[in-house]
Structure formats: structure tokens, C-alpha cells
Amino acid sequence: MATVKDCLILAAGNGSRIAALSGGAPKPLVCLFGVPLLEHIMLSSQAAGIQNFVIVVGYRADAIRMWLAKRPFTDVSVTVVDNPDYHKANGVSALAAREMLAGPFLLLMADHVFEPKTARALLRQPLADDEVILGVDRNIGRIFDLDDATKVQVEGDNIVAIGKDLVEYNALDTGMFLCGPALFKRLESAKKNDNCSLSDGMRQLGLERRLKAFDVGGGHWQDVDTPEAFAYTESIFERDFSESPVLQRLVHA
Image (cartoon, rainbow, N blue to C red; front, side, top):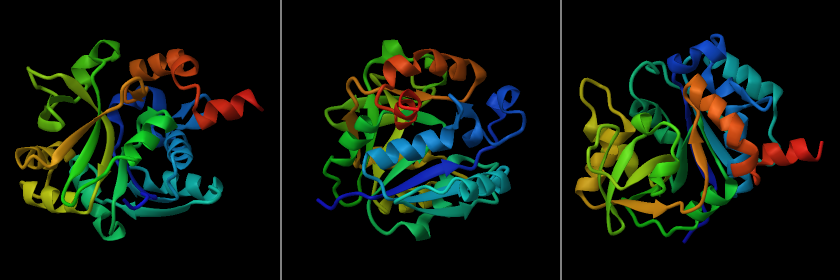
């Protein structure tokens, strides 16, 4: 299996639910322990072995580009892709980057922090052609905001249903995907009125038994998309994200 070195980060949304905290800045630049969320994502990914980033921007794209220009990352390449339709669902942002990714890649959200070891373990999973592997969390009781979480129903290693409103589910979507370029075909076919979400494409893969589950086990992650979720993440970060490059940097500063 080829080593996965590419990562697609979706960072285009306007972050309306965290606006009270962001002050109009794009959500990826909201600082957690003095470091933008996007930097948390990139450093953890780099620690997991990622070398090439494709970042899709939209809302306040100028601010993110300016931050990237002032914060050069060592030993990685960064390509920024604009999504002028950032007000649409996140599948449209993924499709904006389809020409940039010819092989397998890690797909991440710009507001989901995680431990490098979790991404490292996902990247080691064998990925078949025309398949996506989603990192799932079966530890449902530890989730901060269950109502907002995307639920999944897993049967064996297959994900057969996905969505925020599932009534029957046995795991949660961590926002970490190991993908091949075939994902873009599914998103394109799932479009309605030129719009689609990642979950729309994943449902199609699920129907074909090509959406697989990888249990993150004890690995920690957190969706940081509201002021409440941000405060919770601050409160548990040192306990649950001890491997974080950001935390390690603060400890050794």
C-alpha cells in the first residue's frame, strides 16, 4: 500500500455558529491556546506523516491566505483553492479541489481537532479502489454535543447509514476520512441543484458497501464549531490531547 502524504482540508465555511467568539474572523483562524484551529489541524496532520496540503477556502479567504503567507510551514507544501460557492454544502468545497488530488488522501475539517496518533492509525489502513474509510467513534457517551454530531450505523466494517438525524446508530463520524479520487465521482453524482454535502456522497458509497469504518478506539477528537464546544475543548485539551504538537510546543517553550 502506498504511503498517503496528501491531505485535503475544508476551510471555506462562514462559521456562523461560532461568530460570537470569532468576531467575524474565519473559523479556521479562531485561536485555541493562542494557535489557530487550522494550525492545530495542519501540525497534527504533519506529525501523522502528511507532507502536502490542499486547503479549500471561501469565507474571508483573504484572511486565511494572509495568515498562511505569514506562517510558513516547514517541510510541507500548501496549495490553496478558492470555492466561490462556499455558502453551499461542504461537498461543493471538496469538489473544488478535485483536480489537485490524483491519489489517496486524508480528508479533514478545519474545525475538528484530533490526536496525531489517530490520524496515523487511519492512514495505515488498506484502502481499496473506489472506497472511503471513515474514522468512527463508538464511545458515544463521551461526546460533548451529541445532538450536533453526525451519526453512523456500522454493520461489520461497513457504514450503512450516516446523518445527523439518524435514530438508530452505533458510532459517530469523527470528520476524518481516508479517500481515493473516486469520492469526487460520488459527490458529483449526488449533486442536486449544484449542491451536495459530504454525507450525500458517503450515503451513496454506503449503498454500494464501499464506505468502511475505522474505529478510532481511545483516540480523542473534538468538533469545535460553537462557543460552547470551544470552551469544552479548552477544558479537556491538556488531558485528552497530550500528543498535540501545539501542546508540546507550549510545554517546552
